[in-house]
Length: 156
Image (cartoon, rainbow, N blue to C red; front, side, top):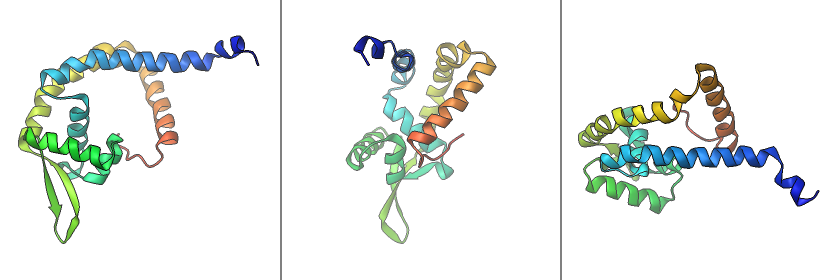
């Protein structure tokens, strides 16, 4: 097949649109977490801790959910600890297991950031779609997520 035919493949357009939409959304949402003194990764981790049972996750689970290496999640939690937004906790009876735990200050920061963040999501993402389009998008994203991350913990 010739390069001109390959370049006309609609799959390239689909991927290009996905990448452009992601890049644009990050640019529109970034001011909401920056205003709260957070990076996007900080917000992602705090949201995952907030939505987890007991507002805690094993460090290994937080690493898997954020797609960070062991050293990457250690640096992330170090930063969140310095900010007072999370702390480490050992598991009683098993000193090898360590949890990242959301602090009260972390909960307060999430409460501070979420209203603007949700408003921006509504303005630049979910509010641009009809309910039917949004339902179809969410269903499609779940199919793709489950295929590329079959071990992902569902937080529906």
